Image (cartoon, rainbow, N blue to C red):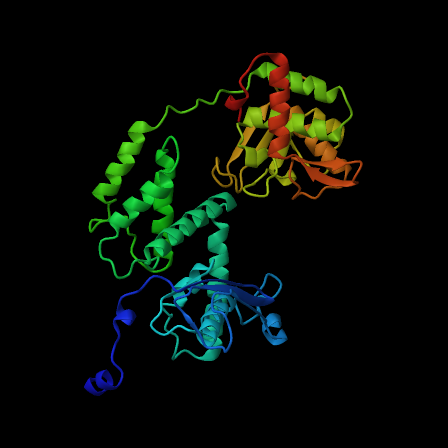
Length: 430
């Protein structure tokens, strides 16, 4: 050790990070990888007659054998995961700047949108003594586990958390600190300043926004194998952070009360919709009636790309008295004569999995849960819909295929009819 110190001394710049001399961004996919570096005037070039202030852009296409061996939904036996390609792209990104620019005793920041890459570039999972086949199986299973983990979070929630982390990366980059603040024991002051600059940068300050920012940062730390910086030694939210949240809560404006949709609005929607022959209008009216009687959430009676678990054709069961009907084989006459209907909850959020909720006829022609579900089932069966078809689907004559009722269709229909009935405030409808 003494000989190494004399031959190769440790420089201060290697112990204390300086302000970044180059900022880079990189990404990878199943086809290849690429990135860009933005160097500053404080870094020299290894290439002759090259201006170091010019951005350094690179991209690389993976060899075909790597592309063919990637784990996908159609190739579960592959040996290469997406996270492995992200890590390879990150290493290429660092190797390229080291070959093109003189990064000795310089601090550089390499940014990625892959948390596993960010973690593995600093900490490797120890599989050195594991056989190659077992190691490949481990990485494949880890990639599949990450996909299942992402599926457990709604797209909207996930994108919001990613935005919070991007703000944190921006905040720590300005300060010249690594995102995990590994050299800093007390991270609370940084969280306080971050909360003040970003989460509280709204008028008025919302308590939920501030708590969401802190929660996202804490969860990302845990995903990267670090301790939650919000918590003290007793695993409670730090006192200073709790006081800031409490101060925001005192300033929160009163909540907007959401009022139920009057029955007269739904009755008007039904009368107007069924006076015409539009399958789209019929579907919207029926789904509004079904949602009203079963107290459903938007993602359960309409189709959305972000967060949707609509009830399916297979979830509906009809009865005539004590006789249960076969939904898929019953005639339209039998379905319209049904006196009781039930919905089976599967993946919906406001019910227990497997729980059945049923309702009887209301006595009205249109404003009835049994009749509304019967109309939906009859329409879907007439167009050979599969049992897995959402109830909010309808056959579009112009496009000759099934389309879906979207949340915007429900909202627009409600607002139009509310405006026609009187001076209601549109913002109270949901």
